[in-house]
Figure 1 (cartoon, rainbow, N blue to C red):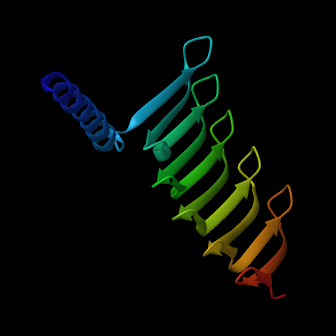
Figure 2 (cartoon, rainbow, N blue to C red; figure 1 turned 45 degrees about the vertical axis):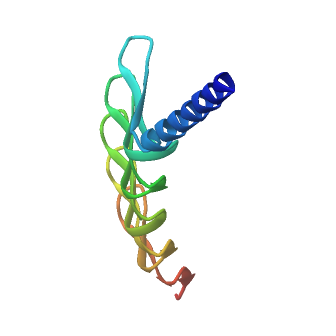
Length: 150
């Protein structure tokens, strides 16, 4: 009787210990770093509870950032940028709680704007401008909750 009680208590303690350990450490940030063959960082990604968290960065082989992304509670949040090997921001957009929100800009390799606009609640909102390769305004479309007005 004593031996079976000790085994039962031991198993219960092991189960409780494993449960507490997994519960306590589920929100501990983990960082994943990958590298190019030359040793330069390729990416740094962070996770909490298995979900994306914080700032993620991916680099070109020359150690210039390629993508910069922000996550909060596993969802896109804050500024996201796509960058050329020369350091020109090609695409910049903003997220709030996983939805596109605020300014959105796309540029050519030389920095010339191609398209500029804004999002509200994940939908195009307000004036969206389209430019030619020389940066001249070609067209403008006004959106209201994702629908073109003119």
